[in-house]
Each structure stands twice: as structure tokens, then as C-alpha cells.
Image 1 (cartoon, rainbow, N blue to C red):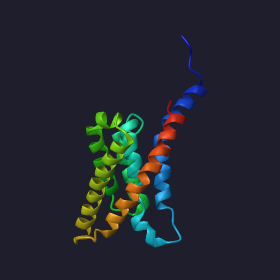
Image 2 (cartoon, helix red, strand yellow):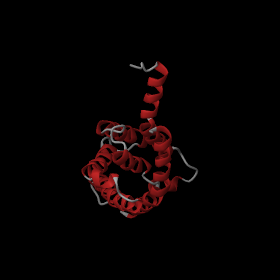
Image 3 (cartoon, one colour):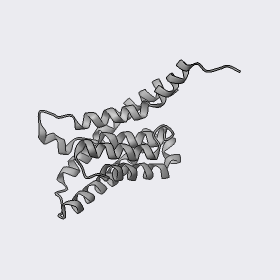
Image 4 (cartoon, rainbow, N blue to C red):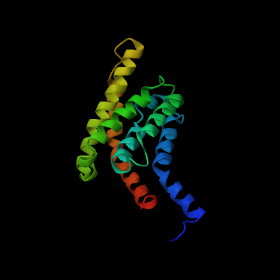
Length: 170
């Protein structure tokens, strides 16, 4: 029986961290300051896109407890109410997990259509929680613009996730 070397184990562990690493880098990219602060409220929900993709294709490498932790870290980095990001990401993750068999063999168009629904649901949850926490109905225009930016970013991000999956997760 062949023994696995320490380097092979480290390589496997590093490859297994690819979904988490990519998702975390997207989270950092989302919170980096920009020269135009007006763009922040309509920044695409990049982490949501990653959660959706990895929940379909590699849920073993991005389990639900890690999604919860990503949501908490996201809230801490963005200044959002603690638990809001976790609620949004878990909502998306659980919705996808319930339909994973369908999504795993779907065409790109069907995956994108599924993302349209999941993103609408997740961003609506975010908007509702925001309205509840502020005790007033928040203007939905920013959420609609964020939704449009998120949906528009999905094809590029899905392509990048697919390339990463092929390169690191063979």
C-alpha cells in the first residue's frame, strides 16, 4: 500500500481550501474602499455568487457551517448587523442544497436562471431585514440595482469558478 507523503497531503489540503479562499478573496474585494463611495451600495453580491456556485458543485468543500462563518465575517467587515450576512448566505445555500440534484446537471442557462431566483430571494431577505432593523421601509432601488449588478456579474464569476475547479479540484 502506497503511503501519502506530507507534501501530497499539504497539496490536497491546499486544493480543498480553494472554494473558501476564492470566496474570501471576493469578500475582501467587496469591502475594499473605492474612489467612488456611491458604488458601494450597488456593488454586486460577489460572495452570494460564490456561495451559490460552490453549494452546487462542491458543497463538501464549502459546508453550511463555513457559509455561516463567512456570513458573520462579512457582517464584521461591512458593518452590517451581525447575523444579516449569515441569514442571507444560509438562505441561498439551503435553497440551492434543496435543488442540488437538478442544478448539478443543468445547462448554464438553467444555472443562471436558478441564480436569478436565488439572488432575488437572498437580496429580498437582506432588504427586509434592513427595513426591519431600521424600523422603516428602505428604498428598494439600491437593492434592485445591486440585484442587476449581481446577476450581470454571474456569468464571468461562474466561468472563473469553473476554471478554478478544473485547475485545483480535479
